[in-house]
Image (tube, rainbow, N blue to C red; front, side, top):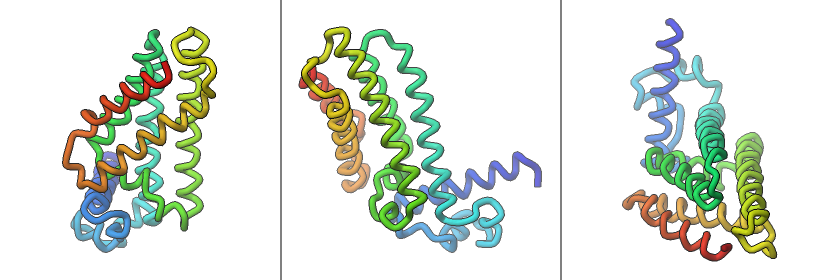
Length: 194
């Protein structure tokens, strides 16, 4: 099997995993169900991924790679409010296009029993807090945001709002465009800190 075939098979396994999660949550993700969706043996899956945890780590890594590319692109935006909006939009666009990823990133049940996944997601969250805090401090130094507010508190409020929005969207069956509700929340948050 050449490299392209391996990558194609790995993508099939990841896509099947995400579809299973979207259909029935994390508890729906088993090697047996993945093998049935992809049309390969369970043994064949283990040639590409060591475990279900390995598959979930790969999904988290993909999301994190996307985040880092969003961060790099928005750093170039000079107007701080536009930078914050683009940062939030980058995340909401990703979730709209990849709804099952929300079930992985915001799934507390898998992380409380799996320290590897918990550490991975915690690192991801800490990085977002760091980035938003930097954005807020830059805006405060430019006189754009209220200087008396703690920058890291604002970061937690932004991330908490985003998390709650994505979680309610996921629990509601992904029935609406999350970017529409996100636009309203984004605007309100920016008004509160200006």
